[in-house]
Amino acid sequence: MFFRKMTEEEKRNSTKASGTAFSILLIVLLGHSVYTYVQTSETGASFIIMLVGVAVYFGSDFLYNMRSKWRDRGEKE
Image 1: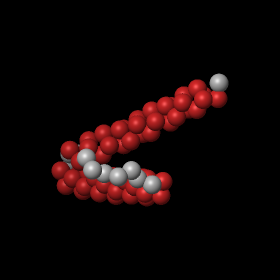
Image 2 (image 1 turned 90 degrees about the vertical axis):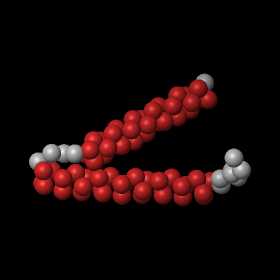
Image 3 (image 1 turned 180 degrees about the vertical axis):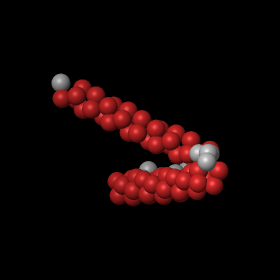
Image 4 (image 1 turned 120 degrees about the vertical axis):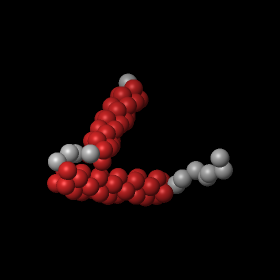
């Protein structure tokens, strides 16, 4: 592709924007899940999508943090 390399400020802004978008998405999915549960007494697919999103987020966050710690530990030795 023909993308240029992002500056540090653009990387920070991109991270903030993706975090905000993810939070909004989770709030909307939670609202839809609650509405569906009240109407039909079933959680529906939006609840499953929300749980998978949360699991992927926290799982990847954990793995990236472990990778960073391992990389930092290797540089100190």
